[in-house]
Length: 300
Image (cartoon, rainbow, N blue to C red; front, top):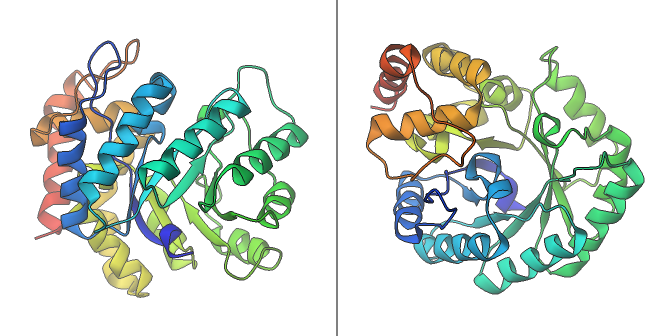
């Protein structure tokens, strides 16, 4: 499924303090990403603040993104929600709006069991004809998919990809090989955690689900193309240039950092959803601008 291959850029969702989405500002962000040559645009991921927006605003955001993309690039819609029925409704609305794929995280307040997550994913996958990607993000959902559960879900019609978290041991080759031996041949395995994109791609990953690409697409496109071509020396050179940014992502979290980058670039992304506050202090004044400049210079 090509919609889950290559570089998927995750833009922030511009909104005011009441969570009302600025669809014009979102359209400008999506237009920038399409022009930069990303392989897909994923709206309403974690840094797209899906958890902080009501369903009406989320539906408005998907429709605005599809309109701005204008068939130049596929739009993937995040449809994670606390109730299965809500995720199904969001999925149906995304398909009606023209989205090309779905991204589903198992949101919860009560800790979910593997059986509950399996049922949830099967129900949402059956709600539309759109291909669905498993959003394995234990840092926000407090649920970590086992390989066994991913393999089970990979057999479900419509579930065609997984977005995996970074590995502490960096052994992406072993994980990818273990999963590929057990899932359908066309099942796509991608990674999030921008600092792990280079080693994951070089190990054979299909996709990079990228936060930084949502506001700095050109450097991310360059890294993606080098890594997917197997150009190890160029990939390592770019990874070294981008290392200061990756360090800030790991230290401060991607949501806060992305708002800081957008401010430096003069992009209209609205307000971070309170109580979350933007990237402030000495890092905003020194470390983050320097990291942004390094990435921008690498794309020239």
